[in-house]
Length: 428
Image (cartoon, rainbow, N blue to C red; front, side):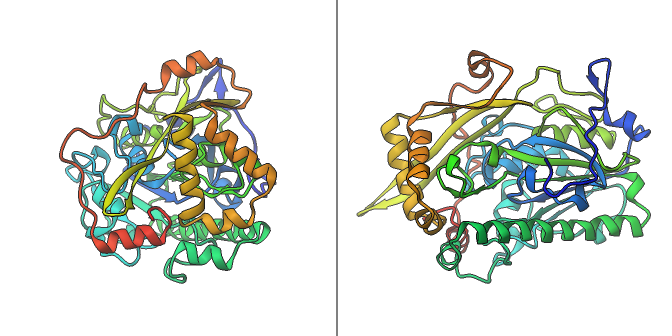
């Protein structure tokens, strides 16, 4: 259920067993403009009412469990195993069609995140082969504006830069209830920043000609014992991390309604391209929900392969911290972990006790949480909920292996970039 929601209707929008395309709900064949607002680390069950009540909300499955892989999936319509951007030093081979300027004015705004870096050095821009930030107010129709908002990413409740690092934040704030309250406050603050853009579109008379999408790149663990007592994201691949909101607004769409069918974040790019009357590439993994709908038995996927350099004496070892694939439907899913049991337990022990989120994890460590974390690391297959499909079918749709890019798309991170990633708890 949407957090604090009292007015949101649960509507299937199904006719004859088929979900209705958004163009039919909108009453419009196309729109001029697109605004995609990505609230970093916002869980589906923490979506503020102020956003949900303004559009059609769907529960979405994040394509990955952290930003480096999820953002390019949202903006290309491809799963990570297709585009193979796994870490912050990877780049797409070319700018995705959604961000190309030959047909529309394009702006990418990441001003509330990576604040210590100039635009050209911000990883989200580098990944998509962009070098400058352009705000909504500077764009003229037809346009596409992507906002990567800091959202409720740690440090919860505070702007980036207030604390020296994520580790420092968790040393000062470690009580589970307090952290959860700060996270909730950050969700509201991010929604307020979104509403500034929404009202700007209204003031400019552009809301009805703009398809607005509010979403997140991944969710967040908030110390739940069933998730091993973890705070943060990346791992384990669990509903708290993969369940994210996707809200379609503007463009004449109804307000305060809910889609019953689960969507994938990879549906966003083909949907907005189609809504603008632009060509949808053949290599997208997602579904165009503007003119079509996902197959009734379609399974949404989430994939992650976190690896990072770890110094061992005079050598650097590329440690695979967590690799997993998964498949999900409306009722649950299966998660398949990579590597051997020994490798998984060793890597997760390092990750949970020595990286940025470690202080909160240690102080909230209970016997139940520790046992669950060990189980999640040691078990090769984890089932969540009551999926209406078999484990065999799930294995048939996930990739057999997770592979790096085989071209020269990787880039070398600067000292400033590594420092910022370290402060955010991504690297050690």
